[in-house]
Length: 340
Image (cartoon, rainbow, N blue to C red; front, side, top):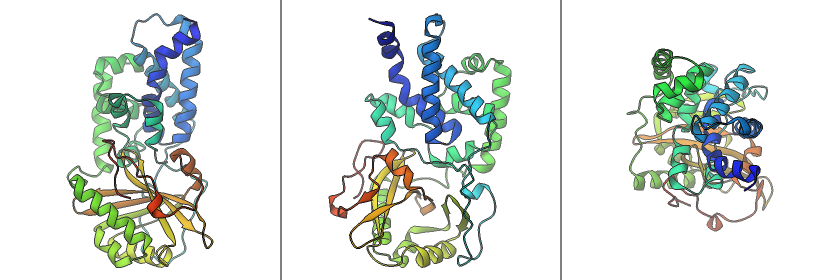
């Protein structure tokens, strides 16, 4: 076996979970892919000196984490609109667009499935990529993110994390306590985000898609929690509360039946939609990736990433000329198709 083949056979199976790790650290799929490439390049260059004092997985995580720490030092955090200010009070006021902000991005689950076929490895990769958690991680310092991800998401022992970060176990435990306390201030409580059972979740999402596609604001309103929030990066303006959200959506998006088409996808380990907007008589064009947070009490948050460029990472075309009945069903984390 050649050195190149040996390196690939030893390291290739970790690419998916390293991609997820870099995404958790940075909140950007684009940057995560670049940094995974940088990780493998550095690993290849130092492969001759790898003496096996740690596992290949630990060695790669050490390189990837250091690459991420350096990248975070060069720029600030990636927020959602709710992380920059209070919600707008008037749904009819002009929107503030902020293309200069490096916004948080959604993570296409299809990237993990494409990287590895081992279900256990995919499960490890999907852990800790829920949108609410990744958004909350952005409030932590770079090293706090690393400590919390390695300890609480990947469940590494404190001594192993200390060795990877070149610090002490005491420092890791102290940093973890501070990170958890800070995260608790910005992350919704688990009971507030408790999901309904699978049949109820699928039924709610099916009704949600139907309400949007038929432009039925009343039907949509029935599915939303009273405290629902709507965010639409790169629009910095966001809304909170069912009346404001329904009023804005009804006036700006639900203009007429058939104007929008929703295609099920999986983003951040949760059901989501790719939204196509009709711009001519027959053609629908990429508009937004919509990630709803579904709870037992209804939809708690809708984040509509208005970036058509994201569609390629979800394996979707920029233009959709097909019918809703012709869609291929997306897969939920258990590998089961969820509603068309």
